[in-house]
Image 1 (cartoon, rainbow, N blue to C red):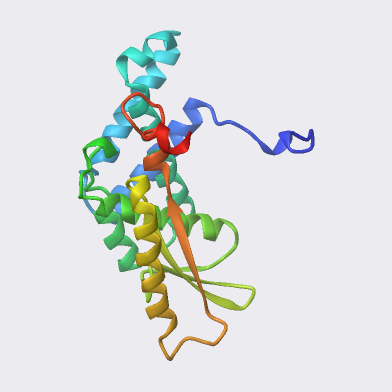
Image 2: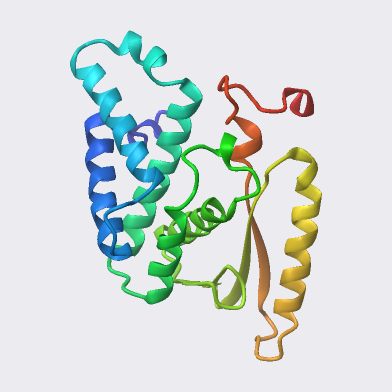
Amino acid sequence: MSGNVHPWIRKKSQAEANAEFDTALDWLENVVGIRSIGRFQTYRATLSKVFRRLLENRSQVIPADIPPSEYIETRFEAQGLIEIWKQFKTDQSSLLAEKLQKIVRGTPFTISEGRKTGPRDILFELEMAAFLQSCGLAVDLGQVTDLTFEFKNAPILCECKRIQTPNALSSNLQFAETQLRDALGRPENPQNTLGMIALDVSRIVHLDKSGAERYPEIFA
C-alpha cells in the first residue's frame, strides 16, 4: 500500500467507538420516542462488556465471554447506526422516524432472523443513504424506489437488497431489475434518469456461528 494512503487510515479506539455509539443511541431514543431500543440495547451491553475487559487488561477472556461472530455483528450494526446518526441527526422527517422505529425491532443476530428480515433491510437502506450523503449527495428516502438522489445532474433511482443466501443473489437482482424498470418507466421521470442496485452481501460472507464464511464451498 502506498505510504500516502496510511495517514488517511485511522482505527478508532474502543472508547471512541463506544462514545459515538452512545450518542447515536441517545439520538435514536429521542427520534423514535421510546426508551426501549431493542437489539441496539443488546449491542450497547456487549460493547460495554468488551470495554470493561480491556480496562481490566483481560482481553484474553473476551472470546469466552462473547462469541466472535456475535461481536463482529455487534460492531457492524453499531457502526451502521453511527453512520446513520452522523448523516441524519438534523433530519426531523416523519419518514425517517418511521424507518428508525422499524429497525429496532429485529432480532439481535442474523442467525435467528429467519424470514423476518425487514428491520435489517431498512437498516441497510439507511446505511446506504448515509454513505451517499457522506459523499455529498442529497438523498430522498422511500419515494418511488428505496432511495433517490442526483449524480452529475442525472436522477438516480436506487433499490437496496440484502442477500440471504448465495442462491438468492440472482433472484434478488432480477426482482430489483423489475422494480427499477417499473420505476424508470414512470412518465414524470426525466429521460436521463438511471437505475442503481445496492447489495449487502455481509450475511453470506462472514456472519456464521464460527465467524468463518457461511458458505465456504461457494467461494472456494
